[in-house]
Length: 210
Image (cartoon, rainbow, N blue to C red; front, side):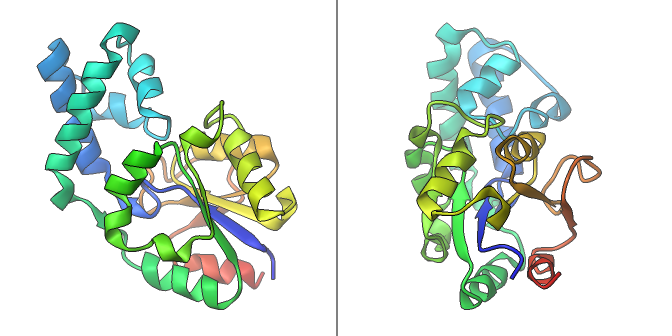
């Protein structure tokens, strides 16, 4: 089998959360700061921790806490907009049956993971969870994947990271881990520098046999 362990990003990879996340952020920026930013300016930053997103779009640090509170509340209010991408649950079950060690490597904090992802009932498929609380440095730095490899007891060449953003890709490349792009949730499906380009979740199973 080509890979012994596989790590997944959440947003844009396992969970279709962009509409709720984007609308919540746009509402928070408008309500708290009077800022109206287009979707393109915001989606390009998704993949980083929330406060780093705010810094990237020019929000002053002293405003981070209150904008984050309103953003999270806005996203929760739109929870009904979120869903698991089609084929994800079936693919995770098939990977577990083949003995692949599965994990999540996310920029979410533990409380956001619990609120946003746990309700969908997929936690049981994963052996390892790495959130932004587990490392001092975050994607695109390789430290989150280093932590995953450490917990998996695996070498970089035995692992695959699946994500949707340039931050996921750069994290994988810096860690020496192969990267598969989840085009079904990516804002940049033609992104260069990827090891694999996945058209649907089931394509992961084909990779294992190559």
